[in-house]
Image (tube, rainbow, N blue to C red):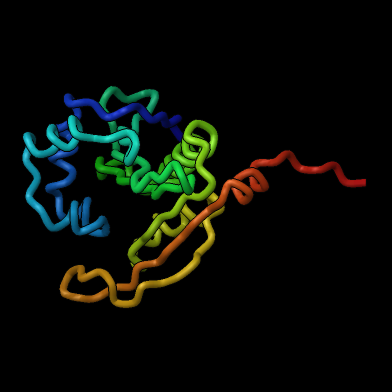
Length: 182
């Protein structure tokens, strides 16, 4: 599997983000802010320009062996007083889905959240039928903490939304070196 890295979103990414945000299959399980609007190149450029680092950190997901990004991810709802934020991710390039990149993206975002931003808690929500995202969060150490029933209306049906979180304590425990057996 190729190695991933995150880089800060730039104005030049607007056409690619616009393409992904306007693809109904790609944004099917994202928030209504993304999936229920028509996005223009100009509206995405404006969002990138107006991005407030005190509220959100936006990234492009890149492979070390590919010039074009494969996705978009970040942390938003940042609260530096309570030291928390919400994680999101999207693999926009359909040919790159199903390759295990979701877990790598989540781990990169957690490393940034806990080591760079010094957060104490990271939150995520997932529509219950988005099994790949649920698996990635669970493998990264997120705990399922609740369900909002019939919360998302997708494809003519209501679906539950699953809440996840991970604390700094959880993150450090999962990444601690194994203790030698006696």
